[in-house]
Each structure stands twice: as structure tokens, then as C-alpha cells.
Amino acid sequence: MKQRSWTTMLLRTAGMRAAVLPISGACALTSAGLTVQYAGVLAFGFIIMIAQLQIALPFADLGLGAAVARAVARASKGRESVAEVRILVRRTALVLAAVGLGGTTAATVAGVYGLWSSFFQVPDGLGPQVDLVMSLVLCIFFLGLPMGLAARVLMGRDRTDLLVLLGLIPPIGNLLLVLLLIGAEAPPIWLAVGLPVSTVTYVAICASLAFLHPRIGLKGLYAERADDQQAGSSGTEERFLVAVRLILLGGLPVLLAMAGRALSEQHGRLVLARVATAADVSEYAMALQLYMPVYSVLFMSAMVLWPRFAVDPDIALWRRANVMFLGLGLAAALGFALLTRPVSNLVTGGDLVPSWGVVLGMATALVAQSMYLTQANLLTDRRGFWRQAAMSLTLLALVIPGTVLGVRLGLGAAAPGISMAIGVIVAEVIPGLIMAHRKVNRPPHDTLPSDAESAPAQRNPVQTKGNRREPSVLQPVRPRS
Image 1 (cartoon, rainbow, N blue to C red):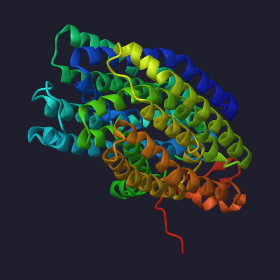
Image 2 (cartoon, helix red, strand yellow):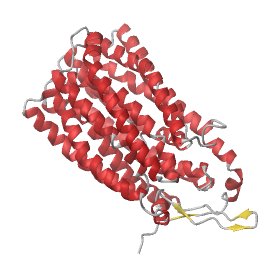
Image 3 (cartoon, rainbow, N blue to C red):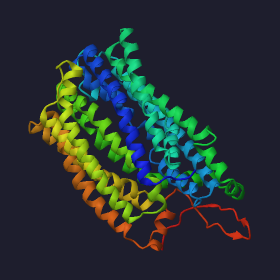
Image 4 (tube, rainbow, N blue to C red):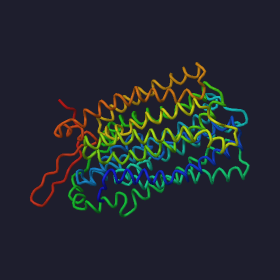
């Protein structure tokens, strides 16, 4: 697959996301309005919190998929053995399946013993089925972990635009299921199941394209690199437990980085559900319904940088990308600030309109996050992800007590956005720019060791003898002396 220029792909991805945003946004807001009318204002925030426990499912690979995306991108450019990609994908999927079964068991036990309803302040009227529904949503999340690799494969194949188009499935599916549940007069808490079910449908389609399609996914890669595949098909046997250990070690920093960032972005509802009122949770949830689609335009657009930086951390590309995403972030924040209140008023009939404090705090957080997106897609080797892990965990350590403090100071639903904006700048933007600047200014020969550590397994250089290539063998990553 011929890789297109980054500007073309970025504009294509951003344009497609902007084009589908009115459809997905209309579906999400219609679902929100129906939920408010059916379940009530106080229950709305809690229902949305449960529904979006699995919000990371499209990329729910526990960090292990980062090596897959990087390996697929490098194999597409002829810099990685196709045989190793095949082994890496298969064994990573097996590890994720085992983790998913363990998570499913834990979520089921938590529901049986009523841990969810005892921890959160459940609004009146949601009934005793909270534990059942929360466990069901989490079980859907964990059982879908192996399919989370599909999005990483498509991203490595430079098909981020396809992911954007398929992203219409969750909001449309959720709206249809909400209408169905309301028509069946189901208990309000069951409205939280629509988004998880439709999201699983989305990743299932991604998986069919990534693993079964003859051109788009891995089959297309194998066909393009048929000589590499044949040359590398022998000599790749390795003890399974050793491979699992290497995969887990390689995925650990990515897992920490992704978990820290995801929890930081989603901490607002969880913290407010614990220390604030149900009204605060609902007000923040409504603003977040508009925030996430806008942020997704920036996030999905930035992902086109990953396969390019994986091949060449070019300083010119880094500078242009930083300037472009700052501009996009400012424009997105302005649009969010101007539209959130009138759209919320229209959707809920005036019952649930976020305050200006909530809107401005989240708009500032949007700008801050846009300034970090380039760095997040540049620092994707093992060393880079350890640095991202440190920044993400630092961010999490700042925003949770910051939000709790803000609630106690009387900021209410505005506390998470303000805390997030300050935390991202302090913990990610400033140190991220410093680390990224050093990386792109490093001489080319100094970047080789970090690239060699990018995946859970490292291969010996491919030796050539005439027109024949010697097979490459997966080897454990050895520590530097």
C-alpha cells in the first residue's frame, strides 16, 4: 500500500471526521435528550457514566497494540519482517484474550457482591439493577479486548480515514437501541447498554477488515511483502512463554501511558459521582457529550502522524504538526464555547444547560490537549512510551485531587475541566515538548537503538546473499550495557 503524504492524509482524515461529525453528534445529542426525558436530569449523568466505561474499547489493547501498529507501519515500508508481524499479532491476541477473561471474572464478582452500588452515590429511581448493568458493560469491554488490535492494524496500514468513517456505527447504533429500549419501557438504567453493544459492533467490523480483507488489512500486507513473508517463514519458532513475557514487558509502558491518560480524561464523572451531587454529574456529562466529538476530530487527525514518525521522526514534520494542531485546537475550543450552551438548551428543552464555568474550563482543556497530540504520536518507541507513561501518571496524580479540591471550593461541575487544563499543561505539554524537541534533533544514528526497542520483540538484521534474504528470528530484547 503506497503511503500518502501526511498533509493529504491529515486533511483527508480531519475532513472526513468533520463531515461525519454532524451525523454522529446529532445521534449522540438525540440519545442524550431522549435519556434526559425518559430517565430524568439527575439520572442522566450516572447512566452516561456507565455507558462510557467502555469508551476506550476501539483501542482497548491494554497498550500491547502499540507495538503492533508500529510493526505493521514499518512492515508496510519494508523495514520489518512480515513473519514477525504475524507472530506478534497472534501472540498479542492470545495474551489479550487471557486478560479479558480475567477482567470479565472480576467484573462479574464485583456485580454479584454489589460493589458498584456501594461505592457510587446512585441517584434515586435507578433501582437495584445498577450492579448488574455495570458488570455487563465491563464484561462487554473485557471480552472485546482481542478485537481492539484491529484498529491498531488499520492505523499501521495508514487507514485512519477508514476508522473515522466506521466511527459512525456507535452513535447510530446507540440511538437505535435507546429508541428500542424506551419503546419497550425498559428500566432507565438499561439505556446504558446501547453504546457498549454498538461499539462492539464497530470493532467487530474493524476486525473483519483488519484480519480478513484481501487488501486493506494484514492480508494485503502479506500479499505486498510476499517475498519477505516466505523468507521469514522459517526459523521463527520461539517458546510461547518467552514471547508472552516479551509482549507484556513491551506493552507495560504503553498500558501505563494509555491508562493514565484515559482515566485523566474520564476522571470527571467518576470523581463527581463520588464527591459531588447528581446534578453536577449530569451537568458535566452533558458538556462532555459535546466535548468528546470535537476532541475526536483532533485525536483521529493526529493519529496519521504515528506511522510516519515510526519510520522517520522528521523535525520539519514535527514543527508543522505542532503549529497546525495548536491552530485547530484554538478553533475547536472557540466553536465548543459558542455552541455548547445553546445546543444543550435545544436538546434538553432547557432542563440541562452547562454553566459558563464548565464550558470555559473544558474549552481550555481542549486547547491544552491539542498541544500534546503531536508529541503523543512521536514518542511511540519503548523509551518514548515510558516517558509518556510518566507524564500520564503524573497527570492523573494532579487532576484527581485537583478536581476534589475544586468541588470543595465550590466550583462544582466546572472543577474537572479546570483541573484537566492545568494538569495537561504542567504534566504533558511542557515536558512533552522538551522531550520531543530532543528526539527530533537527535542525529539519525542515535535513533536506531530506540527504534530497535519499539516492539516487544527484536529481530536480528536481515542478511542478504545474492538475491536471497536470510530469515529473521525473534530475539529477546537485551539490556544495554
